[in-house]
Image (cartoon, rainbow, N blue to C red; front, side, top):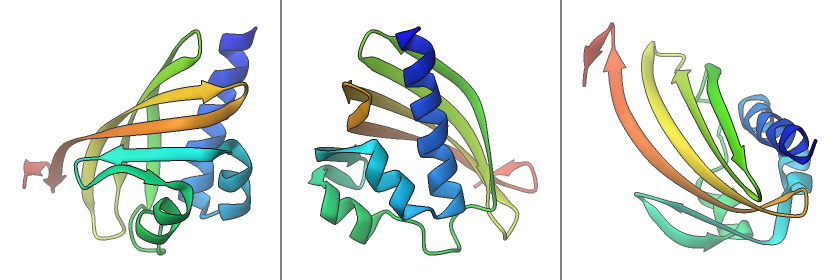
Length: 118
């Protein structure tokens, strides 16, 4: 049952990003949340919202491909398409504290335009 609940949290987090629902995202993230990507290393929650929160031009559509939950950890893979027709695939490794997201580590996948790698 806990695996199902945490998978629902991951889906809600992905959905909040696409819908630009910052209030929902903030509610899903732990107060001491940290975020790491190839561009950011262990930034705090406030910095995450300054640097990484969508500005209305980043994602047009998102398709969650898989969510795997193991205890208090999850991995989600997804593809995104921008309004400009570019697409990319990422993976995020997430840890939880209770039912809130404590850390996200993003790994960027390849980007495409019109089916061709960029």
